[in-house]
Image 1: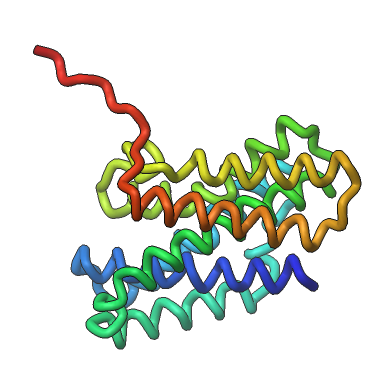
Image 2 (image 1 turned 90 degrees about the horizontal axis):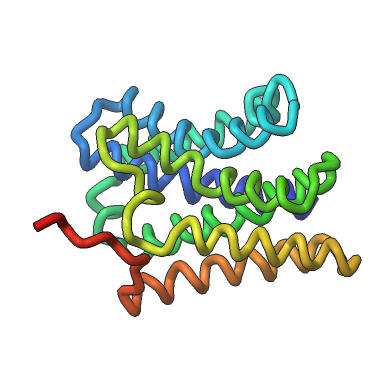
Length: 202
């Protein structure tokens, strides 16, 4: 139940951030919905494919698609108001990253994945949808740029794995790890922390 609630929370957050990016790129309503769906569901689909879950969970249950599509349509209709909430949008994106990375790690562990694989799958679950979104909008994926993004997701995944190894309760560990991801992401944005970038050739 807790994992499902967290997953839907992440879906809404990612669908909203993807739809807003599509609106800024001047896509029509269909394009906004497609990008919103892709951003929200992309990471989970990649996760399930890696774990051999066919068809992917989010494509077998219509509420996932309905919630994402409805969120995208709300953003399309009220995008001027949503765009003014810049901090809220950044927080929503960080929330989606934290929820998806940690829930993805937990699902991978429950599916029998090794610790190493679960960390990578969890991180991929968190960043996958955003990477596909950026590719659709003809941008370099955020995860490949200088911002602290994938590192935050990997930190949350590692915390879930450690909690699993010492047999701590699954639910609280997932929530705490997701909060850590959100905190790292938001502090990095606030303090302008960036990963090192190579110097331009002379």
